[in-house]
Image (cartoon, rainbow, N blue to C red):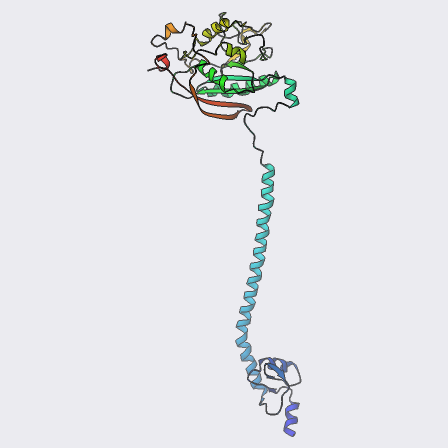
Length: 367
């Protein structure tokens, strides 16, 4: 009885079972003695072996020493997991910010795609105020890119100032035959579509400078804009080259232009005879005070040498009227058709491959 009272009075003596780690911790902070039994801490009873304070302390220290590395390892893993989650959240927010906000901003700044040469809507008020007619500007072309870069924006602006509805067609000959201006104009006429009702044959190196030159619908007959009184180089009365306007109906009445003229020159002189043969009246500008300064001529003979060779019987044939050929028998294929914009001027470029009947015109080749 005395021994039991001594044990109960010693607050630091510990009664423990083999599983007493939890009870050791509890007994160190409580005056009541506890032991582990079945996974739970309880008050000691008779039969429990008393453990000295020193032994209990050594046991607790050993257990703390063994548990410390595991506890630190657990703390380190929790810290790493927390940092990883935080970093992942930050990266996700940054990615969402630049992906969503940046993409939307890019979409706002991106210009809407524009067609290079769209036909104007027929119902727009501006087009109705310009009148019902639409001009097809037919430009025979081969390797005159420097002139084209000047011609296209100049003509587009010039015709807009006159409120003339128009489409620019660059008739680019891409075959290996000699240049054939007349055949290219025939092709341009056929390919210009039903949304144009009159044409102008227009040299790429001749720019009108006077707004008094009329590019309107020539209802009364062919209208020769580059008249002999105004053209900087050619002044004979039957000259109809350079710039000539016709309605599509009048051009068909002439059966277009002859396809026999390979090389430079004479096709416009033959076309003058066709105009007269169709009974059409030729008109020219009047009251133009600018004279030979009415046009700007871009041609440089030093750099742009013209093909004026006459091969085989071509010299004799060039003065004859072609009564059978023209718009009705031009042979060609379209390699490509591309809408482009040249310095703000919408154009349609036709890459044209002409065909030659060597038995009829052996001079279509230089060799």
